[in-house]
Image (tube, rainbow, N blue to C red; front, side, top):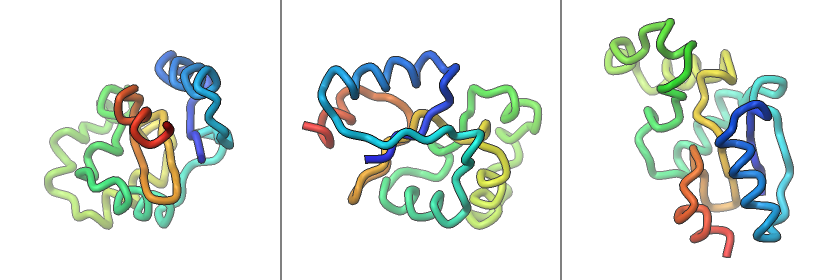
Length: 116
């Protein structure tokens, strides 16, 4: 399993602790130092079955500075994926990626369903 995080994020710390406490094996990846590519993001978005907007860090400063709340509805899926690939701080974190799933954000119940 791939665990994508920003180490200073408290939610990421909580999620990582949960993985460790539940004995889940994972590979760690820093979202800013190793920003997801457009291709990876597209694959994860398709695996997730969620709206693409769920992959944006809507509470982040960068999202707010760029006024993406107003811009996203006007953008194509392709443009949104390209934008996400430019900066890891725009991407919702943590991300848990498996063979058949991709979950943006830490929702314990959703993680339990795929990890247990």
